[in-house]
Length: 451
Image: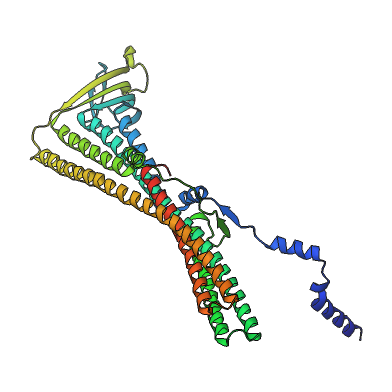
């Protein structure tokens, strides 16, 4: 019996415990389970994407690697120094010979070796100078400039993608809010028609029409919620380690003026990375032609060695012979005949240089076309945005007047539904217009290097 009473008491606590729980503690517990959503600005989104996007990371790695190649090309012109240490033992052949120290010593069995015991400890400084080394520096400098320009191209492409996704999230959230307001409006109209039907002021057909409109708005809201979720996930892939991280974006800024055409042209000509990349590629091909022609010229190699190369590992040998000393060698290799290989290499580099010139010309023409297209798109988007705001105000006034006329019995339910649909369409069109203008403006800013 005692056990049965305890089980009954436990059941009461389980079922009625949540009702008896203090409200303050319940609110505190609910607050700890909720995750505060981050508000991400556009600049922060761009910064996060640059840390997570693999193509941008690859372009950054290429730029850093090219900078190291430029340093190595410059270092190749400077003398290199090594400290060489070696001990050689050769089996004697049983004979003696007079060595370089004017003493008799065992002759090595290998004629190429100088003595049975040979100790080498020398500091060696080497320097090679030629046209190719200077051309390599020029080529490395051009490659570094090209990779820097391509890094900027990758950055602007990433920024363009982030801007599109960012304003896409904002647009989807705005549309969801609009459809929620449209659903509330449809519900209110349904309740109004039902009240008027109960008062025998309208026919049941008005209620049916209002209910159909309400059901359509419910479907629109569901689609808008899915669109928001998809847009947030697509952007979150670039921003967070876990794309399911809750966050929100800032609304698009308003009142941003469109720069003049002269300002756009001047900035684009100065800061356009595609032009800089093409020019750097052309400079690289010029350096490659110079390096190929350098094969016709001789290379001068100098070597300075200081140290010991003697049968004893000592500063002095027998009878005070000095082992420590230096030697200097100079080599001048003059090319004579290579079966026209140098000529073919020069021709090959000239072909690539001609292709680079065509690429630079095409890039310049493409920039002019892109500027015209982007500026025209921004102008039209700005003009239409003003018209869309006017349309929104007009449709809102039309909906208000139609509802008043319906209440007075001068309009039909179909007219009210049409006015509601027109107002919702104007809201979504205005949201699309804002995103279109902001995207076009961001495209111009990318072309001019201001974003």
